[in-house]
Length: 110
Image (tube, rainbow, N blue to C red; front, side, top):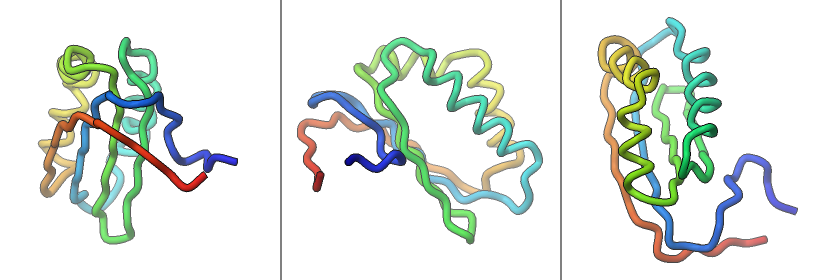
């Protein structure tokens, strides 16, 4: 049985967008926006899945998976996602890093 917190992905290749961040204290609408972005991302062409975790000190990693780089660019430039990005830069994050990687192979303990 597969753990529900893991994205169900096709065989590689595909792309991963790795977003690592350190949050500022408090919510300030972050939770609601995160839920909205997760739902909106699922509607985008090329979206494959997402996995996310955050520790008690505010450090988190979200990995979204995409079929191709064009889908990633379209999501990055989506109007509502741009608002979330700007809001994050202005108040939700102390620091963040975004990395894009091509997944060539994947394996798991099933």
